[in-house]
Amino acid sequence: MTRLGQIFLGMILIFLYTPILVLMAMGFNESELYELPFRFSTRWYSALASNTELLTSGFNSIVLAVTTAVVATTIGTLAALALSRRSFRGRSLLQLLLLPPIAIPWLITGTAMLIFFFWTGIGRGMHALIIGHVALAVPYVVLVVGTGMKSVRADLEEAAMSLGSTPIHAFFAITLPLLFPSILGAALFAFAVSLDQFVISYFLSSPGYTTLPVQIYSAIRKGFTPEINAISTLLLLGSMTAILIFARFAKPGAPK
Amino acid sequence: MTTVSVQNVAKSFGTMPVLRDIDSVFPQGTFTSLLGPSGSGKTTLLRIIAGFVAPDQGEVTIGDKDVTGIPVWGRNIGMMFQSYALFPHMTVARNVAFGLERRGIKGAEAAKAVAEALDMVHLSDFGDRMPKNLSGGQQQRVALARAMVIKPSVLLLDEPLSALDRRLRQEMQVELLRIQRQTGLTTIFVTHDQEEALTLSDRIAILDKGRIVQSGAPEDIYENPQTRFAAEFLGDSNFLTGTVESGGVRLPDSTLIQTTAPLPANGQKATLAIRPEKISPTPLEGATNQIAAKILTVIYAGPALSYLLQTPDGTRLKLFQANRDGTLLREGDTITLHWSPAHSIPVQD
Image (cartoon, rainbow over all chains, first blue to last red; front, side, top):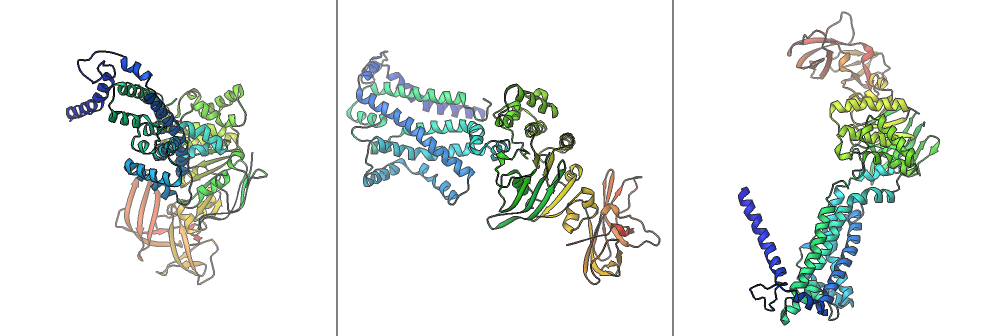
């Protein structure tokens, strides 16, 4: 069994990481048509530096992902707190309604958003993308933070209050620090949901404002160069670093 | 040091009444147990005194101050929770210092108070540990130190020992009592464990269905329970029901049971409670209160022997005996029991 498990694990790693490694390597290959033999070159990185379309959309993607992470994490954390600590009318219904969006295909959500935004006059562009991405990311945040809340017992805040803390002080001194790893994890999740997002971004971006995945898609249709590999590599390294930092510093439950 | 009093308190959750007509005084320096089954309202009463729950009506005073409208953080209480509730992201010392910080006590003064509090619970060397590296008993001691260091006006304990195993629980009981006696702190202790209530308390208040059904010194309640519930919940009891007649209670099988306590009027129904250890398994020449019973089960528990008996009309009785000479009565034998009229206690159903 162990042997079989190792083989499976090996295969998973191979199928996940080989394409990515190939993509990264090809960014350093001199050939424009991805021809072998491999000849090391940084020409695509130099070319990327003057490719404003890719750079702008890459920059847009990151701004959008950070904005989504901040906004969705704030809203989602507050929602998770309310759902786990307060009792109010319609609580279980709200909790239930949070789950389906995760399972609805993005193509359907995207189409629905496009129609809805067109009707309501919200239209397309950066603001529409922010709204769309935040709406997509909030359920994930609520789930992650809500799970984290389960490990923060309500009587900890009560203990703090019995010692003289106001509810607000108890929240900042006790609950928030204990919840921090979950919140950070949720933010990362929201960031990834936004950065990854193609379908909804494709529908909601405007000619003047587009994200990297959308830009890459249209570039692929027009015929493309390994500059795409270069910018993908940069983006990948950026998000990998963020995740590794998170994994290193925010082991849930570990003492600080 | 402070007297705590609760006047005319009632509380409902939704349409469910949880507490009714609660009037109780917790005199300065006493150790009172709120004893009752789950759902009796004992925890809600404690939380009303603490300030976590606002009563629908009534008043709570701590010392001479009406605190009914004051939230928990303004009441200067010390509280221990069933789950210890230590802050997992802080060292033991910071846990203990938490309440001091809230009171603006910092630096050397705080460090000294923390050291004293940890010393009091014999954990002087544990200040730098994290709570998760302590045993359950040690965590409970830290929780006690944290509650005591702020010099609270009243110490409120919400079943703090129920998560500990038996040995540790007994140790902590001794510790708790020592510290309570040393500091003379008014203490209110919620428990469903009658043995714990008997061991620790100066006073016990028995709660049932949201009311205090009886309160007083443990020995008063034990010797003179007023209701069937109190007799059953604090200790074990046998019950005999019959009709009041010529100063005694006539059982259905026409035996007359005598009591020295006042009874209702002749012809009324009455229930007598008889503690199982107050019954002798022997006949006594000329004694009143003699009943024949068959031994159904013999339970040998080392220092104590207990017998399950059945009278001819089918009433089940329990009898406890100290194991003086190691001889046991035999199952299946029919014996004659007797007890003193002073030990038949009329109780309300």
